[in-house]
View (cartoon, rainbow, N blue to C red):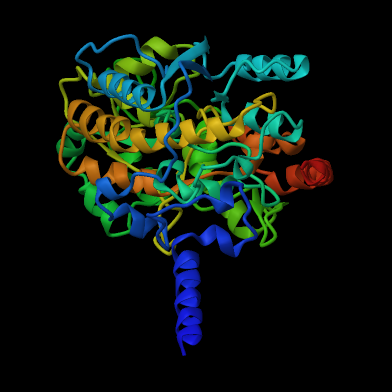
Length: 492
């Protein structure tokens, strides 16, 4: 009898062990999948509602003996030298000191690249990998360079890095799903760096012009699902005026519907805002060319019609406008809409006139939701293959990202953007809408057959024959996609 009781107790103890230590059920794998996480939830939406104190990741206590954790980054510096009273700067400073103290490390910018559009980070990673030199623990290339680096086998599959939990909100799970390729992930937004959200395309609107022309409430239009390309078109026509009476609408003395850069980024924002992709992934996580459909062509034609009416579009590329003039029209109450990336709101901090922020418009009211294009210049987290300590990198990166989600991101979104740059309470929910609807078209990242530029150049050139343009490019694009698939499949 005693033996039976003993056997039962031993069995119960073993069950208890398996319940509390899940790794025993997967063959004792010591990789990322075997890592204990005490706060995993069923979905990112559920996780977003959990109190911040419950979002601390499970990570082992480690002492890295003063190790310099090296970051290759762009103008949004991860490292700041001291607190200066600016909320985002100070949040970064405190985040870094917290993680440095916890793991006995020093976080250091190895190279600080000043231009997000350059390919300097791409070059630095290629050179260090070729030399076999472990110079950078993590890097933040722009998406276009990250795409090239991935196909060239220059980056680590993030899913293979121990302790990084990509289901957590600080890794933006929706982006993880969209940016994976053949089940692998080589780059993704991380809360460590604000570049993943700053480069989202948004619509700023001038409230004085809205009130002066008695236009519909734009926030209500968004909330009711009626903010469409047709509404944008109609409002632009209403407010465009030849104020100086010279018989033409051009120059700083007239009033416009839109000011934007009629270049590649904004056209991607219009297309994705209308939920139309050039390339999209299939159920097997492989990219496919999908633009050859009637709805895409209808959306293309509506965008062409809208943006080519230069009577109400003040193009930043125009000789009379340029960079300096671009930033003057909006605060001078000379344009209703400014179509740009999120971070541009910072440039109008001293603007006297109130302005609001809303997403890019839908194609029509039948479209179910809004979608936000993230510009290819967004800086995303990646790890060079020359990194020789992936476990350490995973622990520190997870800790940095989790701490950033509690400190840096709230400082940027709620305080800097929400309180200092934006002018009304209604804009704050719109920022959430923008961030929660971020989408990515792999055509703009991997540049297969240069198809992104082909479509954008057709719009810039006011080309109506998009179908024939597609037909001339189709095979080239499909061949390029197939080559990338072959290369990705060959990678470990």
